[in-house]
Length: 300
Ligand SMILES: NC(=O)c1ccc[n+]([C@@H]2O[C@H](COP(=O)([O-])OP(=O)(O)OC[C@H]3O[C@@H](n4cnc5c(N)ncnc54)[C@H](OP(=O)(O)O)[C@@H]3O)[C@@H](O)[C@H]2O)c1
Image (cartoon, helix red, strand yellow):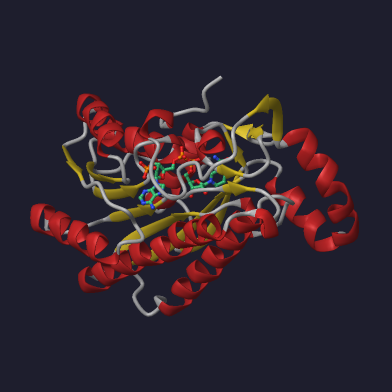
């Protein structure tokens, strides 16, 4: 069954990280339309409260707002314990929160390099670990991790992000292997290509250029439908789902013709990855949130 046509499911308890913007926000709204009970997390409380308000009016049975930094393991454990106290169980955890940085690896400030890896790898590992501990105690549950096609291919000027998404994929593959002894546990990786979200204006940069999602661009709603497909048990238990029709071709070219791929990668990235617009260099939302930039799509 195509992901957009998943079968109706009874309401579940769902924890979504990075729920205040882009793919996480689209996922929260889609879950709310089905009446799911939701715990929404990201760092800045105000945009999270606004998404919670929208979720309640769309039909969510209960919405819990849990502002936190996913790289704070104590905060992650506390939030999960709160959800357990309130609902008695967690059916689905969507580890989606992430940040990005643009610039040659050797030119990206050390704090930004560290910040990208701290959120995208360490933070993701803390949330995924808490999900698995909860699921093992319950005997079941679904973890959906939002990775990227940049966990399978690399492009220039995104080294910190490439490294984080390759590491994240290794983490998810390992956790899939480790949890095969509990058949009720499902762990899926959703790997989007370019998606029209605020991350391109939120990213750190040392290039002074405004970024954009490279063609072909998916909507956050399309990726959310893939996340729900995985959460609905529409996919096999441990699976990597692409969200982006060009992902398979890009992965094949990267693996089978690396020399050609690498030669084309710089002009392709220059043509597709940046607008003509300028942007001041800075850490973006890597070190601290920028709530005014959050929303469903990239601002025009
Ligand atoms: N857009 C794309 O083209 C694309 C492509 C492939 C993969 N992805 C992946 O999709 C995921 C969502 O990205 P998006 O495009 O929707 O970006 P986005 O619109 O910038 O949203 C990112 C979300 O993560 C939260 N966040 C960032 N750092 C956090 C931290 N340390 N702790 C808790 N929350 C944090 C942000 O809120 P606060 O800043 O308030 O915390 C925000 O809610 C990311 O993992 C990204 O790598 C995106």
